[in-house]
Image 1 (cartoon, rainbow, N blue to C red):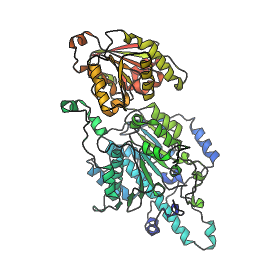
Image 2: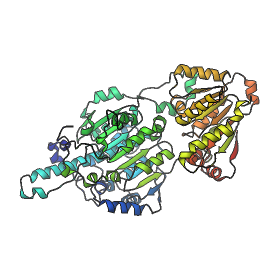
Image 3: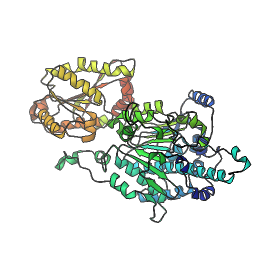
Image 4: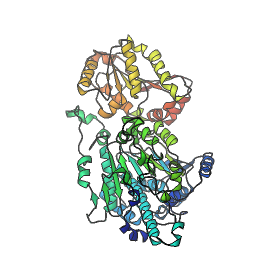
Length: 606
């Protein structure tokens, strides 16, 4: 970036319109935006404030649409808005509020604003961190509109304040009191918002919604630079049919599988957006961007690590808002990339990139940017990994609202199993730390569970399901070392080798098939010939359990022997699998299983 580019963030010809916007220069005690980012704390005072708030008990809030949620150290302004909601409390720009009903109408939504959007904007508009594990493909359109509105409102407000301050500086240029005028409204670098999405199609939906929100009332005239290039590389949604699915087999796959992988499924991308009052520029250099939309892999390849030829992360130094869309899919890609990106947020830049330090906010200069950054985490499931991400990498002084994980039915997903079979749950021995859990699980599995499957004829045709790829590699190496007869498939296995493994397993030439969770997530092959299931760990997605169990309904070569054998599903679980277990068997039963003195629990179905 050339010197002076940071200072050219706003065009001077916008200053007149910005000065006349009554929403731009509001009382810090009223507008959540100004209260969040223009309230200065000494480092010691802020840390003391956060530490004191951590001793407060969480407060339960009942929202109209998102349901029950827990507020942890949430700012008082959130509670005021919840008690008596009014749009004026959020101070959203009037132009965006006017566009909201038209955008919802184009997306086929009823009413100017949906209850879900109102609840989400209530939390996001008060700059409180949000953990929302109820994202679905059905409500994704509503969520994209709410996120786009919040992001645009944040960027345009910041831009207008910078323009106003620039106009005041010019008004006193050369006068005696020029040196006394100080406006701190910049970050160390320009990017303010980071949006992480798993696929290009998700990025396409997010950016397209932002374009709609900006230009809904422009009579078809949208000033979007590189729009044709954007459509070419991110593409409109298209029909998706896997190569291995033919004929009737395609109707056996769940609808959410097609919705998840529609459109462009490339998971390595990054896109910079520059936003003005009447224009939007796409494919902008990061240091000239207001918003960065990227996949974890796309950013990871750009950030690099120390020692690599390319190790660049200065553009993440002043991020004020992080949105993680479909965060559960990141668990199926590479969760380490997400952690790597989060670890490089708010680090002091290696070079100044032409910034005017006299205009940089003091909390940026003091290394306190992480305390002012809002995080919005959207997921379709509850997960301990997602909770840990919020606990370790999100430090917003305005607190957190955590929505209670959804519970489909009181009995959990196990009620969707259509096969008559035994469900055997083994609780592995307690371990002192999560680090030890992998070793304890492996020892228990290889010494207590596997031996029963080696020489027994009735236990042949067993599918072993392993969620973690590292556990899969460890188990595969063990089986090879002990000379077990088995085949394996994972997300890196070629289509030809997958077909061969399925064939050997189906015909009984190989009694065991080891399969990874990511392979099932990305392909959803229907495995025929299964008699028994072994879950090394509970699935991340609870609905995968009935999907795999119902594969036993598929026809087998030796139907007579298959009918004489009682099918079983054996599951290993630990106290760290609480969320996964509750999704499978229901909250009440999961609590009793966790506290039970019995280490082996038998459930029967159908």
